[in-house]
Image (cartoon, rainbow over all chains, first blue to last red):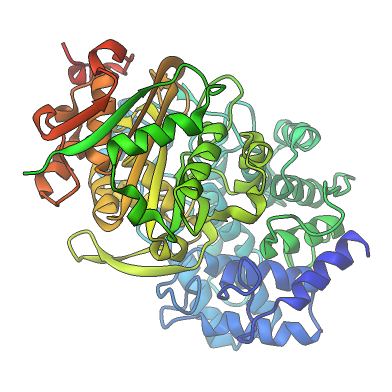
Length: 288
Length: 297
């Protein structure tokens, strides 16, 4: 069995009764691994409708999605799931609510004090607090990964959200990602300098930021070179899969190679989905 | 009031017979441990944060392995290792880089990524909110903080109490776990330790970190292990070994003020210090300027 087939078999074998997937076999369904599993398995199969039903069951009255049925409160997984909800033909009203939740949720930085400290060069972190992306949870700061998924979700909002709002969030969030870029041209979780110390990028977050910046029109030559170099050095499956996917979506001819012929020893279902996405390198389900 | 026992052990290298040392330390710090361990489920929580070949960010895996063997030797039913790094999502790769998968023979079957674990909500922060914690942690009979002795650029020092930041699940709170910073680092440290009450601490100070810790500091050969049931007493002892004043470390003072039995003995007079003499092993750790006032004279 090839890499894609073995991971897909693993995913198909571990869909929960409620239609979702947990991070590991037999564990409670969560939105995040469900999104990766659905992207890996594709539309038009017996798993799709049940998986989508799980995602929609996590949407609350605010329009956002909770991380799981037992964990109330909408979070960043809303933007991760939005493209799938749209592909799955969720009713327009619910899509509009989800889009509005995403457009109205932004980082909590930018207080008067933060702006003042930044302007005086006295902030402990080197971030422009005016540039807000998306937080992991409402009322927290913006970070790289939820901002990437926010930017990707914006690509799918045509007809479901005001164009001006989409344009504004895309512009500011793109600038936020560029502001958080490390001096080595990659990204970590979202802090390039703390207390005057330069922090290094990580392979997986460099890949995520590059995914968020697909079709942004920004010159990413140095960051893509950094990602290529990271891919040649990174052993971890999660980082390798994300780097491969990001480079392929930026048009680079790279192949996903796994250290493991069968599934990863962690038996992480989200990782299995990501590996399939990386091996295929397809824009399908990620960009319209 | 009963004093909290803390054992200080001299350990010059990870090549030493660590199991024997820990066994002796457990007998000193908690003579009646066996009846609380036998047949029980133990969760070891190391400090596995990031990997950098040039420094010593993480609890050494050889110590984690020795701790695992210690609790099995003392009759534990199961000993799990769990961690949820605050910045890195690929916990498995991090464990690989830090040598855990090589050193701990059955690591893949014994490790729980606490960032991705199933969770249960507890009321926290003055009953103001639900805090989700991993079920593996909540279902364990005892949680052992196998921490690293390091300075910390926000809190002054990170020891066994701060190590519990890693139990907060990233899949709920993100990477970094921003909620803990919004609630206040010191307050969050105290709150987690208030919630995780059946705990034990082992602090790895064989090679510790000074300066701009917890990630970018400098390794320092401190040659010491510290163990005890009262995590605040253990951390206060570590602080004295680092020549820092525990009464000036905010979270230690706050934990002490709660007056919870078994948590918060930080005055020298309230600690029954066993094993090596602190004064012979203590050495001044370099700290950032803003923590200069924490230095003991």
